[in-house]
Length: 343
Ligand SMILES: [Zn+2]
Ligand SMILES: [Zn+2]
Image (cartoon, rainbow, N blue to C red; front, side, top):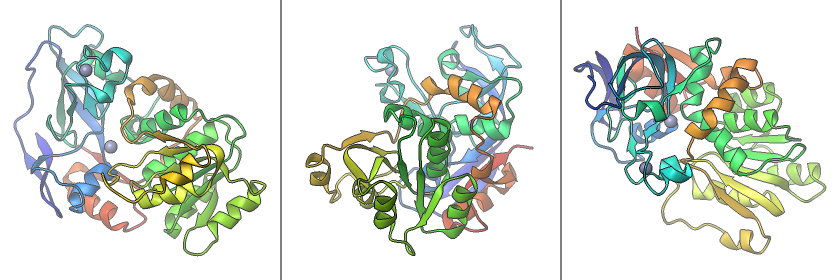
């Protein structure tokens, strides 16, 4: 089978690898019909996050092609989406539904072979794989794997209420998904903040108030629209302590600050006093248990309550994965989320 292989920053290829087989009773094999490149993968491609060479990817939609004898809930032929990681189901955290804090967590493309491949082996398949409604197409369902479900999990954790104002810093796939989710939850004004005109255009077209960080006084615009208070909820969707600090400056006293971005520096100057003095609650959600939110979100996608269509800029054959990485890493050709379709 073909799989996308990360060799070193800037070097990605598609290579032949042995097809995975059932190794444990709880395993399922999924024939992948659509996979995607995530910002997390792009960090490794750019050399901004260390990773070992090997198969990559953690977002996939497909059809179950084989199951181990311990699998009861899923049958061959079932269409499914897989979360980015596999949890044990029995540890202190799993028992509380905090699946991504699992003490025996395995992540596709790291501790498990990558999901940017024609076939993927999914351990604990009964608990991990989410069955898909028949009328939900791959191009929407793929967003359940991580990007949209992560944004949805974060906004649920942030307890967004109808009518509240939201500012999202970052209009990449995660930021755009957060904006779409905020809209679906009945948010008042949603401010979309970025410095790439093509990304702001996607946000504006989807009904957000687009603000260009380089050409607008963002703080003044938000103050003017919120009676001078600031937004009820500010969302960092970049993965940067500096951007988290910018978001902290836009939120009103007693508001909330949601951090969705991956890869925030372990040690970074963050204006914590801006939060403590103004009673702003920080909600960290860079790796939430997305599986818990997939079923309700799949219904919303099938009903068209959220349409992530504009967040996918390209659908390429899996064989052209290297071009997909290049597009996303360089923000080239209007790149947002790049989806990869195995032949
Ligand atoms: Zn991802
Ligand atoms: Zn566990």
